[in-house]
Length: 323
Picture (cartoon, rainbow, N blue to C red):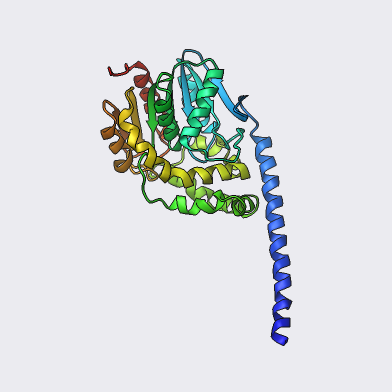
């Protein structure tokens, strides 16, 4: 009897303490989300495709160019790098917040690269785009490839930057999986995940740029707090968990890409292995061009923006190979 009474003595305070901690975490997450969105309001316009509200930015005139960001980021990733301003001198640049990122909605479902591609194809139709150069970075390269495979008349040429194309064992997939699970994931991303993310963010960002230093412009201007909002945490976790299975399906079709393809990557990318990913893709895509920038990491558009802009111009100038 005494032992049972003792267990009740500590169990009730422990449960109350846990509930209080979760409540405080939830309040913190909600407060930080409101602050992030107040400090970083929408920078573009909105359109609705199949019930999904998409946030997009459009700048410049000329041949349409679509930019698709990677996992965890948003439109500002391209804006802060400076390539949008440069490319807008010669192109009609269109940048989407992918579903769940920035200010785009993300209904529950399987947001594979092909699902993204279908959504963007319809969005571009609404915007009057019949043909475009498409640049994808990191996870966005999978969307760019899927769009080229599904809509070959729409995509005139591809620029694939720092991409992940072939399945490998990845620790981030395992770490992200709990947040991607409905129920437990919802609890985590509204309570402890924003706190944990804030603590891990400096090391994560350092790894994205390593071995190069983080550019001062990125450190000063990129809205990292937007990455820690609950919806964006879910989107990022779901995309990370899906990386390996979606590449299993897509890799069988890389040889079917019969359009100009320029592959660009940092020579010391510590996120996507250059040999296993970009070099292998270059081998599997006939007629592709491979650009490796020595000493640079994963965020190639920040570290070597002039090389990325040049890759876009070469892709734009190249002619689709004969069938």
